[in-house]
Image (cartoon, rainbow, N blue to C red; front, side, top):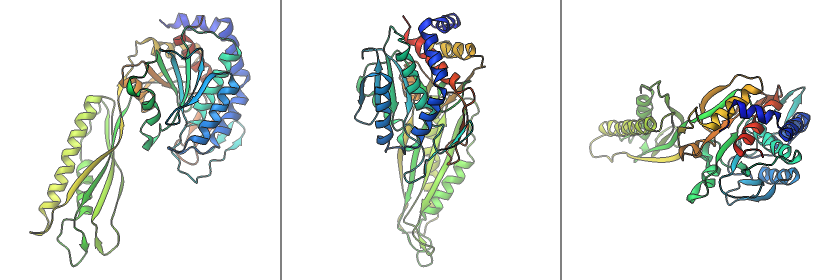
Length: 398
């Protein structure tokens, strides 16, 4: 069982020390790789070019059995592929759409560009850990599977990592996601999310001549007001947000269709299910209220509720060896640790009962999910070393 003592032993292990030294000496190379990866466009659903580059980097690093699966996940192996590996992962995609300039500017220790931290940093660290383990000749009891996943962001709905665990595929011994920057954060609680496109449809018509028919835009307004007044619990923390609105064709037309997009989140799966039920009841209430105001004899509105995202929630207990290894590794590198909750690729294995966490990959970052996103390489190597130590602890160095 990994502990502070076993992490201390790893820090002193000759080959692990060599791997750490390689990471520290490769700090500038890792940063250059991060910038190069960030400059390859990778919108959710169009990660192929970046994935192909990562596959080449895997081969150059010395990983074996490098493959790209049916959905675009890129995998390479340290050790022979077999059951119960330790999975170290990072997602390929960004939140930015096609056509955005993703070039990277550097000023001293700061890199700036869309996706430079989330998740070019995670990908660069993933490759550097692989290089370090191979170059230092680290041998482990369990194989290590390095996987760059697709579809982690937004509309991707964790598509890549869901594919990894679909259809009863072999379960890993542990799963570690590298996501963004930082050295203190340890995500062991999966923030669940359900996302909906809510559409109200009706007959529509001229805004003067057809006035009195049930109005989909009014229904969206009623629904938005009801949801805005919904009291959310603080423990377990849960949220409900209307994130987009749309509909209509002109300034003098009652729309035939209007819609809103909803993002529901909770740390607890039962609380999320309860929130989902409450929200659906409020959406139906908005429908009934608008239909109740229509002129007699005119058609009622219809409601369509389409789920467009489902991110499961759960936790890897604080006492689990994986979480303890991450805490011990963070402390061993001289940093305080922060146990936290977020939505990452680790959500899926956590919900399946597989030990999983997500870690930052060193450095400082800001303006996440904005075109002005930036990364500063302050103690950047320490984040990569932490990933090395946690991976080595769970894979058991010989």
